[in-house]
Amino acid sequence: MSTKYCHRFQNINTVCARNHRLFNYRFIIYLSYIFCLSTTSTSISIMANDQFLIAQSSSSSPPLQSIMLARTLPLVQSYGDDNNSTTPICPLYIDSGGNGDDHNHNMTLNPCHCYGSIIMGIFIECTGANIRQINHTLNHLRSSHSQQSKSAVHSLSIYRLNTSSSTPSLPDHLFNSFTLINELHISSTNLTRIGTIQTYNGLEESLNSLSFVDSQISMIPKSTLSKLTRLKSLDLQSNHISNLDSYAFYGIPLRALNLQNNRIKNLQEFAFGGLENTLEELILNANLFEHFPLFALRRLRKLATLKLQNNQINQIPDDGFTRFTVLETLDLQSNHIRHLNSRSFMTMPKLKILYCSNNLLTVVSDSSIFQQLPLLETLDLSLNRLRVVNLDGLESIRTLDLSYNHLHDLRLQSLTGLRELFASNNNILQLVNETFMNTTNLEVLYLQHNAIHSINYNTFYHLQQLRILDLSFNQLRRLHQSLFKNTNLLQSLYLDNNLIDDMGIEPVMTDS
Ligand SMILES: *[C@@H]1O[C@H](CO)[C@@H](O)[C@H](O)[C@H]1NC(C)=O
Ligand SMILES: *[C@@H]1O[C@H](CO)[C@@H](O)[C@H](O)[C@H]1NC(C)=O
Ligand SMILES: *[C@@H]1O[C@H](CO)[C@@H](O)[C@H](O)[C@H]1NC(C)=O
Ligand SMILES: *[C@@H]1O[C@H](CO)[C@@H](O)[C@H](O)[C@H]1NC(C)=O
Ligand SMILES: *[C@@H]1O[C@H](CO)[C@@H](O)[C@H](O)[C@H]1NC(C)=O
Ligand SMILES: *[C@@H]1O[C@H](CO)[C@@H](O)[C@H](O)[C@H]1NC(C)=O
Ligand SMILES: *[C@@H]1O[C@H](CO)[C@@H](O)[C@H](O)[C@H]1NC(C)=O
Ligand SMILES: *[C@@H]1O[C@H](CO)[C@@H](O)[C@H](O)[C@H]1NC(C)=O
Image 1: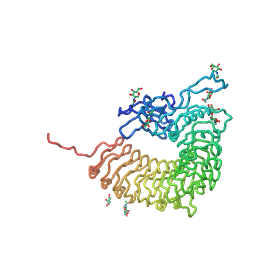
Image 2: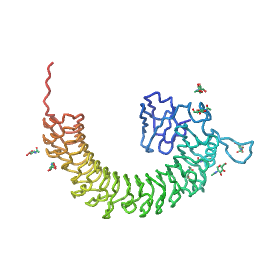
Image 3: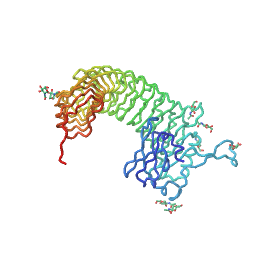
Image 4: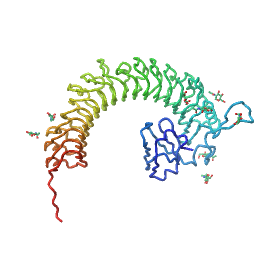
C-alpha cells in the first residue's frame, strides 16, 4: 500500500534500518510536498538511532528538498473509532458518483489516505483525486469524529489534482467543512489560479503553512490570501508567476516566502508591502531578475535570508541609505556579476554568509569591498574568473572558497580566523613562507589541481591546526624534509599525481 502512493520515493533505494525497533511504530515520512506512510517499503533508506532518522536519496533527480520522519504512536493508538482499531480514518472506498441511483453505486478506491493519531494529528494525502473525492473525504472526517478530534488535522496534501482543463482553481468553500487544517500542500496540478477570497474560507484560524507548487499559477491577486491571518509560510515554487501586485501578501504575517522557479523579472516597490515586520526568509532563485530588486526589498527589516541564485543579476546597487540590518545570508550564486566595488555590500553590513560562485568576476581589487563585511564567516567565490582577489577586511572569515578561478598566488593577509580554504583548480605556482603566515587556525587546505612547483620549507610552519592538506595534481618534484615539522595534527595528506621522486624523508630506524 505504501509505496504506491509515494511518488517522490522513486529514486530512493535500499532499506537500512539499524534500529529494529523502528518497525514497531508507524512512521510518517514527509518529503517535499507529500508524505506517505511506510513501515514495509523496500524503497526507502532509513538510518535510525533513537533520536535521528535520515533518509537518503540515491539519485539527484528529482531533488530531495526536505525530509522529515516523524514517529507516530503504535498502531494500537491510531486514530480510529475505538482505541484498538486498525480501521482506516478515511473511507477506503468511495462512491464513484454518477446518476444518483442509491441502489447501484459503483464504489472505487478512495485516492485520499489518512494517517496519524490523536496526538500527532491526522495527515491526509490525496493523489490523483478529484475535487469531489477530496470533499467527500473531508466530509467523512468531519462527521465521524468529535469536535475535539476535529482540531487534529495536521496536514492535507493534494498531489496531481484531477481537474478538467477548464477548471482554473479550487472551488470556493471546499474547506468549510473542515475548519482546522494546519498545513495545506498542493502540488503538480494544472490549476492556473490560486483561488478567490472564498477558497480558503474556514482556514483563517488554523492554516500556518501553504504550498501551492508545481502548477500554472500566473498571478497572486491582492487580498486573495489576506484572511489567512496565521499563515507563516507560503511556498509558490515552480509556477508561472511573472508579476506580483503591490501588497499581494498584505495582511498575512508571513515569515517565509518561496517564489523560486517562476518568471519574475521585476518587482514593484510594494510587492512585499505588508511584510515589513515579519518576513525573514525570501527565496527568489531561478527567476528572470536582471537587477538586484533593492526597491522591493529595502523595507523588509526582518529579512535574514535572501536567495537570488540563478538569475541574471549583474550588480548589487546601493541607494545610499538602505541597511538590511539583520540580513545574514545572501545567495547570489549563478548570476552575471562582473564587478564588485566599495559600495556593493554597503546595504548589508551584517552578512555572515555570502555565496557568489559561478559569476563573471575577474578582478576584486578594491581593499574596501570586503571591509563592509566585518562579520562575514563564509565566502564562496568559486567558479568565477578571478585573477586577483583582495581579501582585506574579512576579519571573521572562517570558510573561504576560491576554487575554480584563475589565481596565480594566494594573498591571505591577516585572515587569522580562517579554518577552511578551498583553492583547488587555479593556477597557483608556488607557496612561499609568507603565504600562510597569519592563518594560524587553518584546519583544511585544498590546493589540488594547481601548478605548484615549489613550496618553501617554512610554508606550513604556522599551521599547527592543519588536519587535511591536498596537494595532489600539482608539479611538485620534492618536498623539504622539515616542511611538516610543525603540523602535528595532520591526518590526511594528498600528494598523488605530482612529479615527486624523492620524498626527502629519512627512513625511521626502529629497534627490532
Ligand atoms: C479510548 O481512550 C480514551 C483515553 O484513553 C478514553 O477516554 C476512551 O474512552 C477510549 N475509548 C474507547 C472506545 O475505549
Ligand atoms: C488490540 O487488538 C489486537 C487484535 O485485534 C489484540 O491482539 C490486542 O490485544 C488488542 N490490544 C488492546 C490494548 O486491547
Ligand atoms: C457501474 O459500473 C458498470 C460497469 O463498469 C457500469 O455499466 C455502470 O454504468 C456503473 N454505474 C454507475 C452508477 O456508475
Ligand atoms: C495537466 O495537463 C496535461 C496536458 O493537458 C495532462 O497531460 C496532465 O495529465 C494534466 N495533469 C493533471 C494532474 O491533470
Ligand atoms: C482523471 O480522472 C479520470 C476519470 O476518473 C481518469 O480517466 C483520468 O485518468 C484521471 N486523470 C489523471 C491525470 O489522473
Ligand atoms: C462538498 O460536499 C458538501 C456535502 O455533500 C456539499 O454541500 C458541498 O457543496 C460540496 N462542496 C464542494 C466544493 O463540492
Ligand atoms: C600578517 O598580519 C600582519 C598584521 O595584520 C600584517 O602586517 C602582515 O602584512 C601580514 N602578513 C602577511 C604575509 O599577509
Ligand atoms: C622567508 O624566506 C626568505 C628567504 O627565502 C627570508 O628572507 C625571510 O626572512 C623569510 N620570512 C619568514 C617570515 O620566515
